[in-house]
Amino acid sequence: MATFIVLPQNDQVAETLNTTIPQRFGNHAYALPLGEWLVAYEGTSRQLFEEIGADSVIVLNFNGYWGVASKDIWEWLAVYQK
Image 1: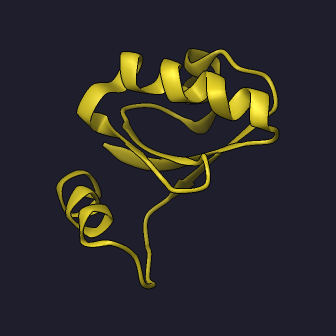
Image 2: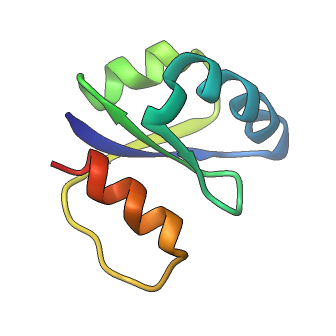
């Protein structure tokens, strides 16, 4: 399962994602503090973009990470980043 970050490009899309992503992906999604989302997904960036169905988002796949964040984020990544 790949891990993606979904970046809304405006506040209206961010609000839409706050409803859409948890409904579609459940525990495979994690909300970040500024409106972005981490999503674990079996597919490509394009497929995830199309499944989300929102305009004005950027979907990036990643397989490495480093930084300072809350314990919850690191725990979520430990489960879904494989």
